[in-house]
Amino acid sequence: MKVRAYQPPDAPVRIVHPNPRLREAGESDEAFLDRICALTLERDPTLGGLPSVDLNADDLPKERIRVDPNTKTEKAVRAAWKIDSTRVVIDEVAAEALPARGA
Figure (cartoon, rainbow, N blue to C red):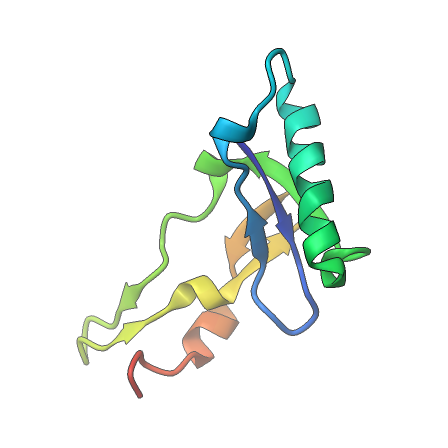
């Protein structure tokens, strides 16, 4: 399924995951995503004009939590996701700077 990632300034990406139950009969992936994102923009106009990229949900980074092998502390690296051209990646510099969860 296609998703759309928006890159707010100084914030992690926001991902719009369309609910498959809302898909209309015969609607293409692109038309479905565009329709759902238009509804999302009505509810959250701050996303309007932000850089965005459409990609398959399977292409999003799998890592959301990272455990430091030395300290065994966890970092929520989902907060370090960013758009890099046509994909979403983990910004390793930002991930390293994240505080441990619960700290």
